[in-house]
Length: 388
Image (cartoon, rainbow, N blue to C red; front, side, top):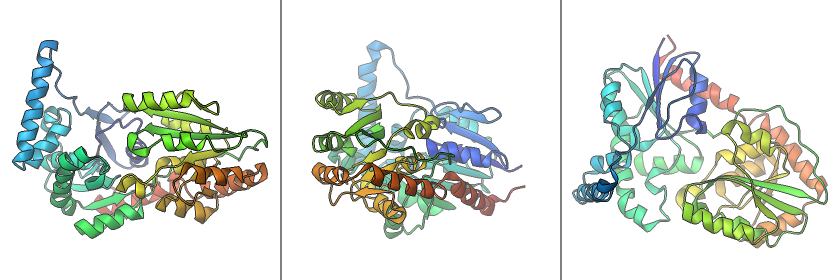
């Protein structure tokens, strides 16, 4: 049986794209996994990317200063490999262990891992990258990120992308930019969730429940959706099911939520529970101003999870998401990213219209599910390394 390593700089248990790929390939290949946490899946060998070194309390500040100084020194020298290594946890033990392995294919779910991948790969090992973001402009709305990280990511793309045997990405906009700048042609594999046998639930005329779920990331300007709730009529409520990553930003959001009676925060659920939990709502909401390149061309998991949950969708005029919503006529799209604009579109909706949009999501869900991706990923891997 051919051997495949799936490696990601994240938790493979909870991140959708690597997790799904593991499930799709495990019956036909000997799968091993490396990530920031051990994979909780029986029968699959798992490695952990070690955390950054921990120091005793008295050493912590001086050690941190030394790390920052060393990273800045490497940055000024243009030593992008060392700067990139400093962004990861401790990979030395992992590299030593993987160097003795013989894989037929390594699937990397992060650009930052490519130096490690090419260091440990055998001469016949094929490499596939899942470029989930356009990495050279990942957070280009932040000036410090542009200074410190953009040159490193550009270097990694120029050095390693042409050496990959296959590159996939999540949307046409990202694929086109990779081709324009780096001359590679990624195949688009949208982030489609597992299919569920649901039917749309009827909407109440006097209470329309909206849901937004995901990371409370500063770049996404979650406050835009909170402000929108000041302009919708009394039928609408919004639940936020969010994971806080930036404590200061999250505190600001919580403060804003408390000032509004039509918004509440609900506990997040596991990846597997998102769709059945959100099926109880009427509308999936994602108004995200294009504050950076990746958000401009975003085609996120949550859009397809809204559709799979048989919800109507409410979004701004985001390029890639709008294309899907228009294609399946499953939601409303505002003219711009002003909160009032989407509120106006929502206020026009009747319970009957919402139900019609939900039915269109039901039809779209038959097509926009992981079965489509599973078939294509298996074909790609078979083309790269065969099956026996």
